Length: 391
Image (tube, rainbow, N blue to C red; front, side, top):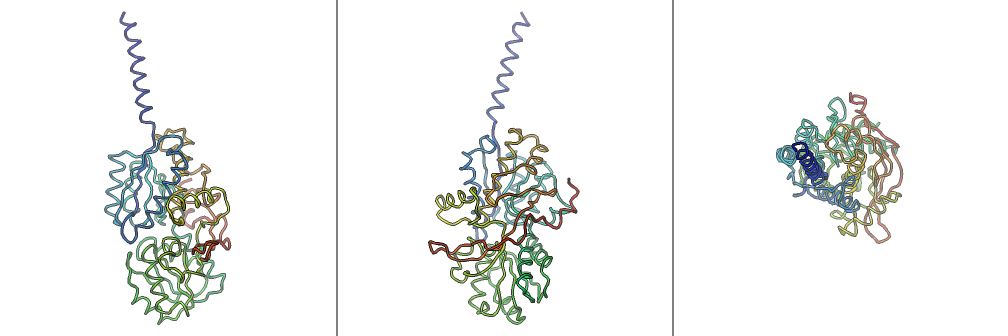
């Protein structure tokens, strides 16, 4: 009699357990980004690109229901760290993503690494995580910080520009930016100037720039910084005598509408452009414009590709997201759908991919937009990967 009772009971417990597993059959993503203030447009674009990918995937990642928790880091490293702590310790997310600024990532990501929670970068790619300090729980669907600027340095060299004045915010990505530019630029550096991150008034710096009389100025100023700098640069009359060289971060759709006509003709470098000729990109651009009533920026493209990379990895591990090592292996090896075209992940977690030269012009509708005019680097890897001990 005891055996007859125990058998049905065991079956009932097994069924209950299976039911519980099925009920938790989902992927939890903690999305943290800068969503407010002068720097917030970048995070909003990234978030919207991520959400569009989710829409294209039917609200699922790897075939599992996706639960996304989004939080605003308010452009503050301490706030960012608190949010990632909550994602990892309270919400027990399977992935963390979304940070735009490298100083916030450097403050917040260690919590994810310590808990072995995969961090999939949709933007920030500091050199600190690319070389000796690389993490087995970090992978980027964007780029390593230096890369856009390396492409710009190569472009300036190819154009025969002999004297360049350099400017960037004084934070990790700004330092990486100018390091990257100098790695491929072969001319003279007139000066190297760092300003406070978030600065919006450049009167003093423009006076110093005028006095230096360089042939060109290379600036990395993202978001509101880029809008204000270019407006003030043009208003000061400097655009008549000094060539402005830019990375895509300072010449994209978060900046172009606010500055307008003075952006026409400016060249910049990026790993993506709205006119890249692949089916995934055409669908992305068309649907983003339909859903959000604006042209997507590089930040939106990265958000989209981040969701697609997570989707491919979850699918590759057959939904077993609790196996973190298998997830990380999948993130670094799967071929995800991408708006930039083909790319691969290097040993340090950063992409090996093409970088393009773009020019700002008008499309058939008269809108000011980036157009691809050439390829600067093909299958380009960052300079730090050889220092990363990961295989």
